[in-house]
Length: 215
Image (tube, rainbow, N blue to C red; front, side, top):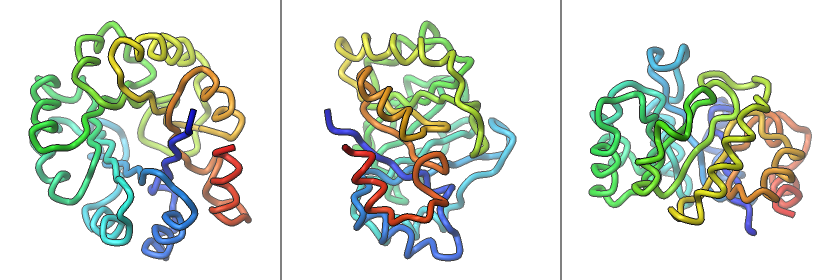
C-alpha cells in the first residue's frame, strides 16, 4: 500500500518558507498539511492566511487544512478560496458537523474529520459515511514535539476495520516517527503527517528522507 506523506508545515523553517515548499515538492511530498488554530479550541495559534497563500502559490500538490478552531462552518469558504483541497474539522468544534461537511462537499473539496485522543469513535460514527479522510490525533492537538499516546492505537485499529465499510482514508498526526510509520502502515493506515519526529530539523536532504519513509 502506497504511503501518503504529508509534511506538517508548522514545523518548516519560516525564514525560507517558499524554498521549503519548493524543496518538499521536488522531494516527493504528497500533501502539504497546514494547522490552523484560534487560541480557543486549542491553547495555541497556528499558521496564518499569508502562510497558506505562500504554500498554495508554490506547489500544485494537494493542500489540507486542519481547522482547530471553533465554529469551523463559518470559515470553510475562506479556506476553500485560499486553495485548500482537503478541509478537516473537529466534530465537537461546531454545532452541526454534518452540515459543515456537506458545505465542504458543495465547494468541491475533500471532507475530513479530525479525532482527538479523548474523542471516541462512537461519538463520530454517524459522520464516517460523509468523509473522505479521517485524521487521528495521536497527541493532544495544539503543539509540536509531544509524546505519542499509545492508547490511541486501539482507536486506529477500529477505524481500519470500519474503513472497509465507509471507504475513507486514515491519516495519523502527532509524534509520527519512522518506526511508527512502519508499524501503522502495516495495520492499514494510509497517510502520515510528518513533523520533527521524522522529517524536519534533520541534517539530511528531504528527498532522501521521504524516499526512505516511502520504502
